[in-house]
Length: 227
Image (cartoon, rainbow, N blue to C red; front, side):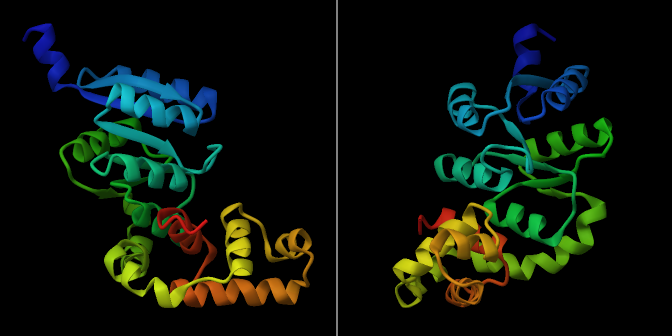
């Protein structure tokens, strides 16, 4: 097999991981496989957007937790600009919220970070072929999440209802705080209102957006450019 043929058969991977040691470890391990080519790596979400356009990787690995923009928000922004991008979320957790947010943002795979590199290689090759993959240890939670993800994946239905679900200026301020990860107490302090008032605003936002938690509210806010 010629070098050019080998290059074309390789899966080009971009690694987005903020922890340098982990990033180097992932790159080193993946390079050992002749079917994988490391297109590039970065610890910055902002730089990742440039690298994706410049390098055009087949698969993007994203750390969900430690990015300047978190992994879900990064996924949303990538999918907005490149809907066909194939994204694998790496997470140290398997919480319902993270799975819901990852799937809703358009991730093709959700992996627990302590998986073996052989398994990660399998996932990369699976996703590169256009399939989706969920870590078996998170499968039960994922099944419970599929119904909830309709709240954020059925965009046409959401847009049709958007006018009657308009948020007030104050609710938009609160929504920005939710996206920034602020608690009800922190929202109250920032907006100079009582905790009771901040809780009421958060509840109203959930009702208008048709969601049950802060993660889904944040995903819709970013995806629909509400803030």
